[in-house]
Amino acid sequence: MNKCSSVVSYVRQLGPQHMPLWRQGIELDLNEFSHPWTEEQWQQTFEVYTPYFFFHYRPDNSEAGQELLCTALLLMTPGDDLAHLVKIQTKRSVQGLGHAKKLFSEITQTLARDGLKTIYLEVEESNHPAVQFYHHHQFLVLRRLKDFYGQSRHALAMAKSLTATQANL
Ligand SMILES: CC(C)(COP(=O)(O)OP(=O)(O)OC[C@H]1O[C@@H](n2cnc3c(N)ncnc32)[C@H](O)[C@@H]1OP(=O)(O)O)[C@@H](O)C(=O)NCCC(=O)NCCS
Image (cartoon, rainbow, N blue to C red):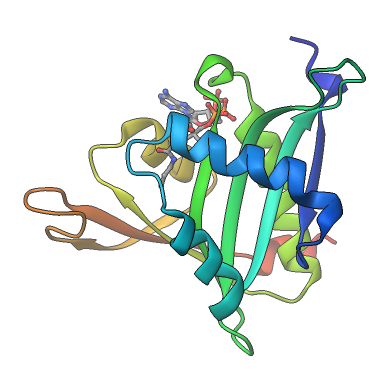
């Protein structure tokens, strides 16, 4: 894969022009994630929170259209300076190629520029690729959440400060 041909973009106000990518993002969740969201959960995202939806995709002028590689969804409570990373996922066939890394670099720079101070998340303790990914990006473990995802499915609550990123902008 030619990594240079991919593009990262993000959406704050979902409009009709974003719908093809948005639908692909939901499909990615349905097809590739072990616990996908329902249509209602996606809807609530825009009713209750101030979301950022990041897309990493490969533009394509063929009939097949753009190929979505990776997405991330972050939610903010209005007025707060903490962003909650609730989803990040790379299409299985292109995992391990640095797509989430490129997406995450754009996420940290965008949020820091917008004055956010912290990224917070929960991750299932047994999800080693994701836990490694977060350690790799300087997330620190805050605490262990017992049975967070169901019986014997523990989570780690993790956070990353964006202050250093802000200093470098
Ligand atoms: C976690 C996830 C988003 C990583 O996406 P990716 O595009 O494959 O990640 P990248 O190729 O950008 O990897 C970046 C870094 O993450 C870590 N990493 C990624 N996949 C890994 C794996 N399978 N094992 C160990 N470390 C891994 C490495 O540190 C890697 O850096 P390096 O290649 O310099 O060592 C991907 O595994 C995924 O979509 N998982 C399913 C959905 C999910 O569980 N999301 C998290 C929910 S909280």
